Length: 263
DNA sequence: CGTGGCTCCTGGCGGC
DNA sequence: TGCCGCCAGGAGCCAC
Image (cartoon, rainbow, N blue to C red; front, side):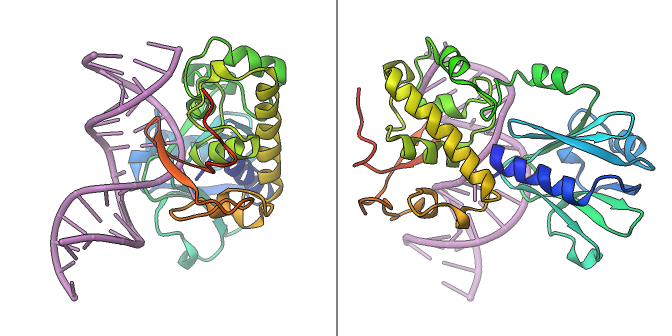
């Protein structure tokens, strides 16, 4: 799940719950999720400090530790955060537990362990090392055209490639293409100026709309694809059965009527 | 540069 | 019922 809009919701969640509280204890419950940092170092750099402010870039969340370093969080397919008081409420796949002096806890829960937690001295360097493209939400149209120029891949692949632009995943690339009326396997270099503009505008619209819904697909507008994005699902506009194909190894859903294949 | 295949990991579901 | 393969919202690596 965790794409840009989910991570933005997590960021706001951390802001609302976990800042400016003394950290008493840090427990690494599954060291597999640690990036280039040991459990000992993570504990040493966080214990006794406070989380100060947050940043998001693409699908990464950065939490600044007072006067020191950034905690970096990536959520893989199944990662999420939970702030709670009673330890009985600890989520089932807690991999990192931060306990505050006020008795509350912040859990990084990640069933499939495909996420990554680490430390970074500098966010800009971190982004460079990961070779992330510009954040999809910050991108302007001029830059958008520039980064797509000369590319030969499919539009879905291009939207999802974090090195080209950062933040869009499999699910929301489907929504963006549905709203823009573009078939997922259309080659990027076949999109004319008008189509590029439409793709860009819908990318922004969809991401902003989803963030305004707190990334909860239940709250999305009626004409959105996502609530119907499953086997046998139907287009919310024309009731056609949605097609399901593989694009770049990922499952794509689209409406054959609203997203006609154009070569 | 792009594509397809494999890998990491865990768990739910459908089919036999 | 029980077991097994398949699949899942991320992403890196490799061969071609």
